[in-house]
Length: 353
Image (tube, rainbow, N blue to C red; front, side, top):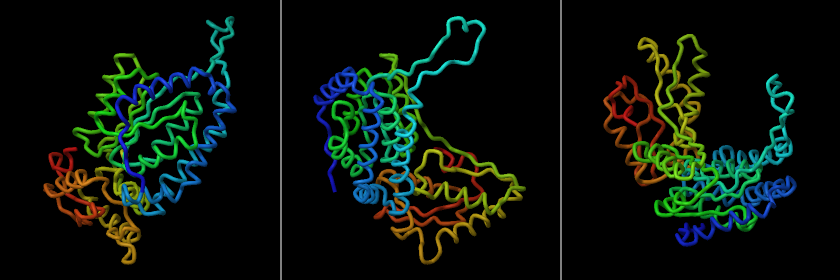
């Protein structure tokens, strides 16, 4: 397994200048060259799918099927979509007819922004790196990628492979933690995209979004901020309950719940609560029969870091609700079973983050 090596701080300034020069060379003005880079990106994933599978298992305890379904295959599909559509996306467009401007015959031309920064998260460390990277290449930009230090093996693998497949003047990887991220944010980018999940919601995703936005103000850099939330689900008692239960449970259990928009809590009429819990129990048994319990490494992902595990375990330990499904934990393997708690009040620990 590759080891995460932090990028020296002095190298970050040099790397930024090299990306700027690479963009100004004009190579990515060619649609054919963009497609060539996208094709190389697709082969980067395809050629090394087993290594990515192993890296995702090491970082997140990701079962192979889930790793391919959520990230490896999904990433190739994102790149393929960009490769197939880049010519259409890059074509000039005529705006809708307006009597005020029709005499000017306006046309909208698509121009690259320049050098962009992508700060990708731990929870989908391949897919949420490759998707923005493919989009930025298709748009004709040079890109600096800062993967998450929490998913260290996947980040190290990306740092190893990207220089072997992609033009080093146009795509670079910066690995590290707070110091390296801070150095990156001191520099001028033409767009920044921090994708931050909720590993530490009180001091993580939201705080990082604030820091990135504040740094961008200095240069008026446009930002794309992606933040999760409590993601409530509202159940109508007249719904197709078995289908709703299966969809909600899948959305919460995939990737061990580490998804920014995973269902977090469910609002139901009090008189309907037990019926809904029973439907979740039925769905849970179909998802995890005796032969594939969540505690099996082949059936369920794990929490990304010991610190994240302790945080979630603390929320569960302090709940005043009633655990009706799951609740099992194992610190050694960073395992927390799919868990359903009923009779949760708005001031409960589970509602605090």
